[in-house]
Length: 111
Length: 194
Image 1 (cartoon, rainbow over the protein chains, first blue to last red):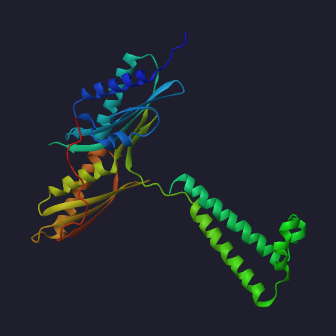
Image 2 (cartoon, rainbow over the protein chains, first blue to last red):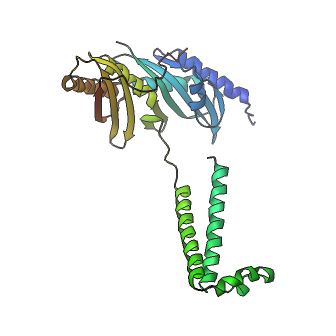
Image 3 (spheres, each protein chain N blue to C red):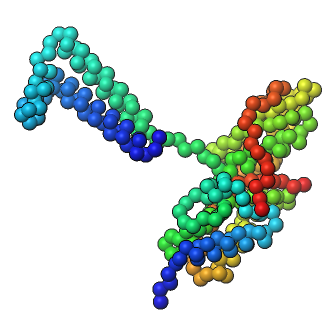
């Protein structure tokens, strides 16, 4: 059985990405047009998220704003975001997830 | 200039080089027009083989000049444009890469520098090299501030904030203090999140 891939699927995946990001304290999607432009690469785009398929795997690029405290760091929070997004997508589709690139567009530090 | 325009420029330069080379070789007697061109065309170039004295020197000099100019232009056009990096790589592995935009790091350092007593405003340039990150901070200070004590404080805070939050090594911080306001283009530092 072959599985056809429609753009709607990519939209659903992008929405799953934003949903999982929204559940992570300190991480947020960017909203201004810069986010839309800077998520480079082919594929379907939503604000700050680009999804495309390559060699049978789903590749995702995300642009985020981060609010970090003194006990956290950008690499740690980004890894957490990547793990959460990967888990969310794998729960949604059996397709393998390739790379997840994260671009931090804005950083805020809280005391 | 887009790729199409660049292709046109390169094509124009190549035509110029070919034309100059042909005229030069015919003038120098290395090519005979009758041997390399069909009948109606070689008559145009035949007078070049009969040039003498000043005329000969003028044609040869002009062609050599245009050839040099063409080669220089071609060289400049073919050099790949240096792509200014807009982000610093924080982490890169098989699962993907994590980058932070230069503006976000600049804002981070500027905010941190602004917390130092005596600093009115700050403008930072971030550069990434193979050994780490270089920061160049221009800070506008109050007349009461002393650069000797304020500079190291800004350096320390900037280094700490970048190394701690970004996880990258800062290898150089250059601080430039001034009392006059910075003439930077103020970037909106408003929140860009949901």
